[in-house]
Length: 145
Image (cartoon, rainbow, N blue to C red; front, side):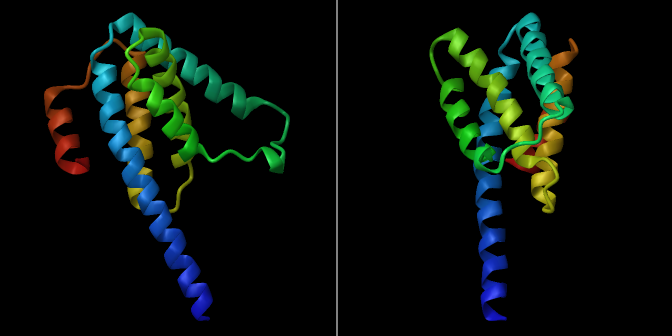
C-alpha cells in the first residue's frame, strides 16, 4: 500500500512541476504573441490549428514506441521562441502552442486544465484580430503569475 501512495505522490509532484514549467513558458510566449503583427498571429494560429486537427482526424493510431513527451517538445520549442531570428521564433511559437495543447489535454489536475484553457484562449485570440483586453491580462497575471 505504501508503494502505491508514494507512486501517486511522485506522479502528482511531477505533474505540478511540468505545470509550473509550462506556465512560465506560457507567460513568455504570450508576451511574444502580443508583439506580433495581426497577420503573423493569424498565420501562426491557422497553421497550429491545422496541425492539431490533422493529427486528430488521421486514421492512423499512434505507435507505442513513438509516444511523445509533449512537455519536452514544448521546452525545445520554447528555446526557439527566444531566438533572435524571426522565422525561427515564429516556428517556435507555433510548435510551442501545439505541444502545450497536447501536454495539457485531458489532464486530471485542475491547474493543468486552467493552463489548457489559457492555451486555447491564446489560439482563439490569435485567430481573430482582437488582442486580449487590459483587464483580461491583469486578471491572468494575478491568477497565474
